[in-house]
Image 1 (cartoon, helix red, strand yellow):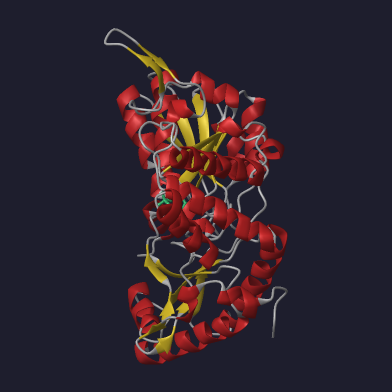
Image 2 (cartoon, protein in one colour):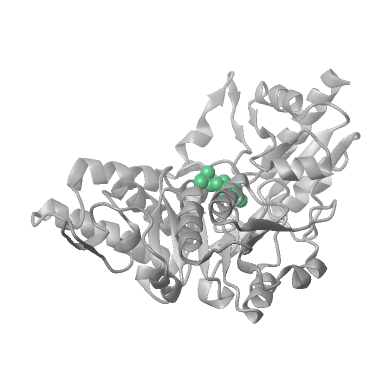
Length: 408
Ligand SMILES: *Cc1c(COP(=O)(O)O)cnc(C)c1O
């Protein structure tokens, strides 16, 4: 069985997919944790260090100008990828976690008062829970939660009552990394905006699977990580509407984020530099742009279709394993399958799969509240990328059957 993409050619672009583990062909199904990198990304980073490594926004010399141009071109690539109105609405960060901490800290310092609240969802990653708890504790505010049902679907009928006057911001994930649920973010944004409340979307598991247009979504803040989008680690982006970014105070202080400094007073730089203190991750930004170019070369719509076909095939094949239980059964979902086998611990299944060369993740996936709510210790999770094949799904199924025989 074959999908809609030319996977033979595509897989050649990712050198690591040829790796053997324990003498077996690697089957990499841990893309929700991080994705593999195409040669073009590795080359772009390599080229930067070999040919024009230099600090940006500083030097008069040629290499510094080249580095600055490439760094700003990377910002432009991201801006057009997510359809921002202005390029300066893209702030380079270390990743999703860093972006949420930036917004939580700056928004909280500017706008949170005792009695206020931040509304998140029941399926957030720890990085979209803890930064809000930290700033709320500091400001005497609280964190409220949109509940979900046992299938992993947000209870949208509870939203309207939750959006009371105390709520100053809604922070919600687009796609759940532990359950695969695709949330109705358009509806959430519309309901929040109807009450004048801004929304931050965690797009860490969406940006690589679903075409995203920030203007069409009308989202106020959006964050994602480069490494889950086939780019390097240590780089990511925050999108913020210009009016919101202008209203927020700076995050960190340092070089590049200033216009003038005296011991008496500092005048901050304009967007986007106001939020980019210190020497940025130039090679990371350039690598991320190369990753976006690669993804756009294939096309996100084609990627989305191929991944959905793979997901449907995997769900069908896996559902035939007796004793296997899916965790997360939202009708709207992306290529993440969390499961448990009978009453065994997910770690045991994961380890037995690993010995067969099949990489999945086990544990709470940085979503302890999700596991507590479902009263499970964690899950084994297979998460797909467009370079995964139907044969790899078959190998996963065979691998689980083999593990099951040992665990029974
Ligand atoms: C991975 C992930 C994060 C955290 O991303 P980092 O790259 O670790 O900063 C946040 N939210 C979701 C939904 C994720 O999948």
